[in-house]
Length: 206
Image (cartoon, rainbow, N blue to C red; front, side, top):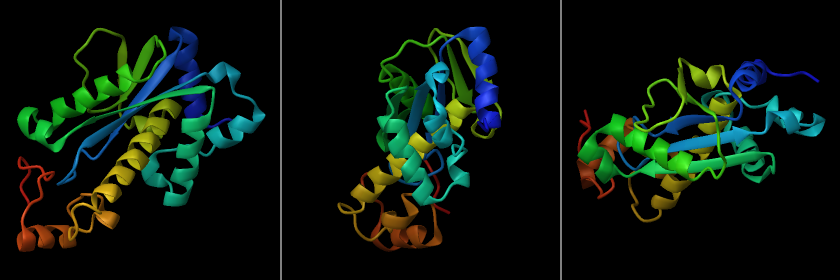
């Protein structure tokens, strides 16, 4: 069985600390829509050969094609050996408390929705949680940790789907493809038709 380096990284933490969860965000740098945080906890001891084939494909969501991300999202959300949670913070909340705190709030909501007790939470660098618990902030965590990489897939696919759905309600911004990020076409649309009510007012558009 060809175990990935991400799996090995997390097994070391699991042996020392117990049950793990990983957190990663999507949408921090967007001009519109919420920031999403995915939370994943994998029962590493129960992974069998069939599931390890799926696990070996997991990596940072930015390194995966859309098709592979979708397949792995479906695996993460349907495996009975994996617990998941998703939290979000709206554009209004981002404007009110700032993107860093809003991301932390989304992370706390993702943990609340996990439905499984964990002993250690692995955070991709930049996510700050203001509550009791044991946490490790991992620089480039989505390149190192299976749990964080899995959370990055959960957050990315979940948020992309949300923004493509919103594109049906807010036409003209191109969210079907840019999912709220600041592409030139998106910025031109804002200049032409103005901001929607889910655009973030705290980010400059130029």
